[in-house]
Structures are given as C-alpha cells and as structure tokens.
Length: 427
Length: 94
Ligand SMILES: Cc1cc2nc3c(=O)[nH]c(=O)nc-3n(C[C@H](O)[C@H](O)[C@H](O)COP(=O)(O)O)c2cc1C
Ligand code: FES
Ligand SMILES: [Fe+2]
Ligand SMILES: [Fe+2]
Image (cartoon, rainbow over all chains, first blue to last red; front, side):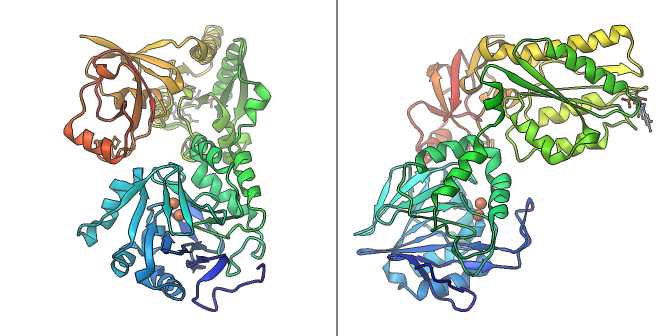
C-alpha cells in the first residue's frame, strides 16, 4: 500500500483505501494563491471518489482550469450514471470550478452542502442558471451509499463560513476540506512519500486558519474523538501515515502560550513605540510605569525599531490591549507603525483594547490617525489618545502615567465587573 | 429618547443604546464575536442567538425569516445586521 505513485505520468484515479480514490489535479506552477499566500512548488486540488454498494459519491472538485484532469481521473473509475451524491466541503472556486460541468454530466446526483453554503452556492452557479436541487446538512447528518456512510461535521470559518468536513465511517477517512491542507505539490501524493512539507503545513495554517483559532478549537473537539485512519484534505499530501499528529499540530498551533504563563487572572498590555528624539519614548516609559502599577495587568514595552513584524504580530495576537506611540512626521504616523498595523489580518483582534500616544511639533495628526485605524480593526478605544507637544514636562509625564493607569484599569475592570458602556462613547 | 441595554455574552459587555439601534452597529464598535458578511440580511453569516429579551427586538421581516430558515436557524436565532434593539436583551454568536 505504501508504494510510491506518480500521478504526473497517468490520469487514472488513485485508490488509497478500499473503494476510496483520489481524483484531483496537480498545479505545480502556482506561486501565489488568493493574493495572501505563496507557494514555492505549487499546490494540488484534491477531489475524491467513494464507491458504495448503491452508488458513488464525489467529494469536492477542482479549480475550473483543471477540470479535464479531474474528469479523466473520475471516468477511469466510475460511470457518471452511478454517481449518487456530490458533496461540497467548501465552495471556494478552487474546489467548485468543475461543479457546473459535473452537475450536467451527472444530473441525477444529489448535492450536499453545509447550511451556511446556500447563498454562496446560488451566487456561484448564477451563470449556469436553471433550477438545481441541493440538500443542506449539519453536524451528525449522514448519507448512505449502501455499505458506506458519509457523516458531516460543520466546521465554520475553516476557511469560509460554509466549510464542513465529511467522514467516511467504515474506512475512517476524514475528507477535511481546507483543514489540514497545504499548498504543496508533489506527484507522490502521500505524506509518507512526498518531500518535507512541514513548513508548508504550518504556513497554510498561519494564513488560513489562524484568524479563526476559536473555530479551529471547536472543530478539533469534533475531530479528535473520530477513529482516524487517513485524513484526505483538499490541498497537499494525503495524510495516511500517522494522521493524528496533524490533528495534534493544529491543537498546538491554536493553543495560547501566554495564558499558560500569566494564568487566567492576569491581562497582557503591550506598548509599541517609535521615537526619533526620544520624546515619544519618554511617554512610552511613563505610560508603562503607570499601567504596571495596576494589579492584574502585565505590561511589555517594545521599540518598533528593534524588532520584526512577525514576532510583534505574535505578541499582539495574545495581548489583551495594545498601545501605539508615534511622533507626527510630515502629518502622519511613522511607517513602522503602519507596517505593523497592516499586518494584523492573520490574527483575531476582537475584544482587544487599543490606544495611541505621541509627541508632535505643531500639527500632531499621528495619534488620531492610529486611533482611527484601530477602530477600523475593531479594537475598542477606552481612553482618548495622549498627545504632547515636543518635550514632555513633569506634569505631562504625570499625565502619561495617569493615561497608563486608566487604560490598565479599563483592561482589568471590564473582565469581572461587566461595566456598562454608553453607545455615545463608542466613537 | 428611549434607551435599552444590550449585553454581548461572549465578551461580557453591556451597552446602553438608543432604542431602534441595530445590533450590528453596536457589536462592530465593541468588537463582539458576531461575524458579518453581506451586512444586508442576505448571507446569514451574522446569525446570533438571543439568550434573553427575545421580544425586545424588532420582529423579523419576511426576508429575514427566509434567510433564517435557509440557514436552519434555531428558535431564538436572529440576524444581527437586521434586528433592531427595542428593549433589554442579551445575545451571543450563534
Ligand atoms: C522630518 C520631520 C517632520 C516632521 N513633521 C511634523 C508634522 O508634520 N507635524 C508635527 O506635528 N510635527 C512634525 N515633526 C515634529 C516631531 O513630531 C516632533 O519633533 C516630535 O517631538 C518628535 O518626537 P520623537 O522625539 O518621539 O521623535 C516633524 C519632525 C521631523 C524631524
Ligand atoms: S451579514 Fe449577511 S445576513 Fe447579516
Ligand atoms: Fe479555501
Ligand atoms: Fe482551498
């Protein structure tokens, strides 16, 4: 069973469990995906065929441009008339490109999608119009193929609201969609034969799953109890050898390290700043001092000049509040601040507090601009930002400490005493 | 103007709002966990569960009822981009 295959050399289906076949396509030339992802060796669009005693099921299709390869592999193993079910784990076009054509070739097949996928399906099939029937399924729903049963697990936001996984009960195969996938193209197809894809696996997680960690945790709750003989994701190698370690990896990647260290009581406040003449730096130090005096708040202070975006993004992900300090330079905040603030799409910022401060010479736009950006990122700003003209005086340094205390108090306060906010104050 | 209190259970936060405010307006500003897609009552992404004060939201329109049904909403589920707050209630992501 663990013999090497080479799917570049033929266009047949590849059987990897009894009556279960890979019928996907390889895209070795792809270098960038969905704008945000890169791949150094392409990707695969994995589609699958499951044969049962009363009919076959197709699970996902491929990107439209690769339809021909998909249909060739499909035809090598099954007649269109025998297709009873088409399951869509995820409606993104990289998996539904061949769907309209498949529906025409197998008009009797029933379409199964998650309940959140309805409006997307309509939008996707718009051009081909016509009436089409589909069945929405939720966690626990089953489809029988006679001697085989497909069971569904609704796993929203991994990667879109519609995503689901499909589990073939008798064979212990989990068709996981984008979950456990990666953009890695290798004609040897199986995790125990392909090249080293650990980096691609983690990279895919970091860009696709990371913003939805709490949804990943919910999905893992459903996946972990399953008997897993193989995991068949929608991209990258089929995980047939020790599949469970990929599940474990997802759990590791989704678990907060900081909570371990701080415990559940303490909140983390991270202050980033940039300073040319040291004025904004002085403010940052005093704010840190003020905030540090509040019980239950752990403060970290970072000069943006001395670090890398990626590690700062990691810090932000686990922080409960973020403050940014920037001088105003030519009517704007400085670029390292914007660079960091535009790198946060991969983390979940919901519920975090934000704030801004900075020294300025005459116009001082930076602080308001940073606050606006933070609001755009859905951070809550509990305290209006602090601006100080040129070199801070003793009084102004005290104002910095007081600002730090107020932000820290908002942070430690609203966790236990559900403080009531007025809508008018939520600018 | 009449006021109402809405609590977002996932972030344990209560906000005092003028009656008639849409849930989406508050939830986005405060960073509650409800997620939005189309923002116009079509996609069902913003489904939320109303824990308390079900009757203190405006009644769902025919269109909202339809989308809720399509998305197999539970008994006290609503679309946060559509529902307006009339009295005290508490909600969380569905
Ligand atoms: C090249 C340059 C451009 C500046 N442009 C502005 C500006 O547009 N508006 C403003 O309020 N201050 C401006 N300033 C003044 C700085 O914001 C001010 O010196 C501030 O105190 C610097 O803070 P820092 O010590 O934290 O760098 C500028 C300063 C420099 C050196
Ligand atoms: S956001 Fe689409 S229905 Fe509310
Ligand atoms: Fe996707
Ligand atoms: Fe995908």
